[in-house]
Length: 186
Image (cartoon, rainbow, N blue to C red; front, side, top):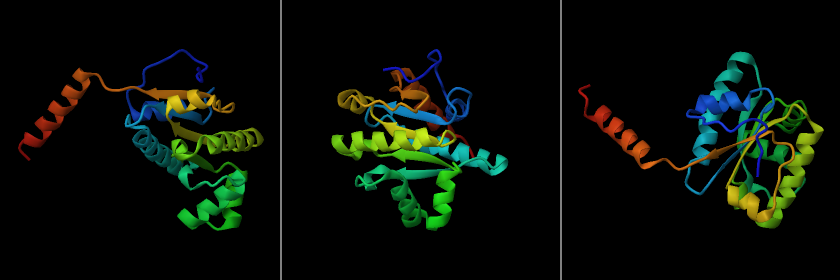
């Protein structure tokens, strides 16, 4: 499974992931892959904060978190419009305009919570949405094994980030740094 069109690289910070997301060739379409508990959602939210800061300075697309566990299989764009009302109180006309003009970065989480049939159905709907709007940006989190087991491919995502577990030395360094901070005189 290869989503990236460039050489594999190690990204060591959330700003580096945000930079990748906004780079030429990736063009705002990124998968965040990893095993359960590896921090996919945390990474999504950290990157969202960076994208929010950048959007507020440069008037780019506004990142909006979308919990896919709430999706019951209906047509994707009308569901997103309703979701934006229910979760964020964005009126239907505004939500429709924002979606059609790619003024939102869709931060899609909880794909793994969908049944395998719904995952395939959602994949088709998302591919249609992304194909029909070349400027629509999106980040989707999911477990790598879910994609592989279901034979799911996202045709309109341009790259992916695979979150790997920390090595023992990385954990030790992190914990020791936190301890030093908490023990330092204030």
